[in-house]
Image: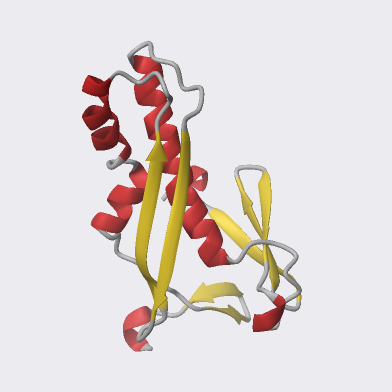
Length: 148
């Protein structure tokens, strides 16, 4: 992986963390009811916002590519949690096209929006590994995940 595809997360206070990516900083927190200060969205909300934002981006690019107006384009998202394991169990995206979108373009717009990078990543999940780094006398080293 390149440094362009890397982000870092640092603890701020309580349940707040700062996420740094490509020179941008995003803060996450938890609601008061979950022990946080509700100073920022939760990581799960950012995850869902990334999906909705990606769908909106792909939809807009489709419209621009075909010389159509993107005025009024919007995306809404409803979700429900599931348990065991704790996760988002159901997501419903609502793509609202511009009022003047020709009827013959609706199906193609939906098809393009349904294949955004985040949606594709959820449909065909990436391999995810979590590696524990621990300080060593000679610096920071990684534990071999197969030895854990």
